[in-house]
Length: 364
Image 1 (cartoon, one colour):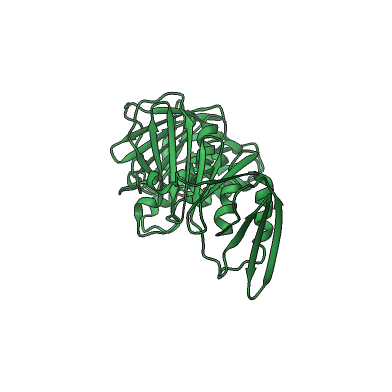
Image 2: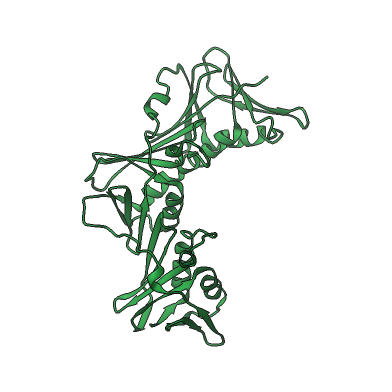
């Protein structure tokens, strides 16, 4: 196999596909990328057995078709450091030669037969959505998914298509993010829990906002097709929590904020909180909000914010980390907060498509 590749294009392919690789694995083949060079172009493939990705290079001149299994980390390092605009990749029986104008590298390769197949679409119905909308949905949900939990079903993001809309929901048991967007076309209403690693990998591939993304659900897998990239991933097993039952519908207090002003106020109020004192007190009174963060070992910080507020005085505490993560991704100038009492969840809303439920914390 031999091909002349645009270095920037190959580097992007290796950056994206290498994100699927697990650094520590007893199977050497899983630390490699499969380079598949055919007359129609060159494809770079990587997998950790749970998620696999195929990246098709557009800027390549194929000299000779063939395939090879190349160590991903070394290959990526070489391509990243080479200064030329193009480079030559030639794969023989047991080695890969990479040539530029002033440097030459030879890497040992592995047997292609030891590399697992990465599934592609099987022609079933799917849904279509614009890449920009999908990326926004990922940014507004993924942060709320559980990082480590014995409840395996919340270590992922729920995808729930319905008609012409797609809803995503993520929770870690202490907060919940829900967002929806309009599809280009539907075709399935099967729900699925997509692993967080797959979501992060997909986010890296959604570069062109107007590109169309095809999504299909096949048995226990999701297949996502972009113009240059195909991702195939197993789904998270289990039953996702009944998220509709978590969202309060009887909150009587509703306050509107400028999102950037509330973000700044929360950030400043949290400066003196500590790991053992992770709470910011929100004290609402007529047309005023005072945010207070304190810890015995550091001190106290107060921030005052002018607001339109005509309800009874109310005091509630939230973990500032949870609030700040949501405020950074709302994507609108205004945001509202719905409350009922100090011991009930707060609901942040941004437009008609995003809501965020956060449990209060007890403040002494």
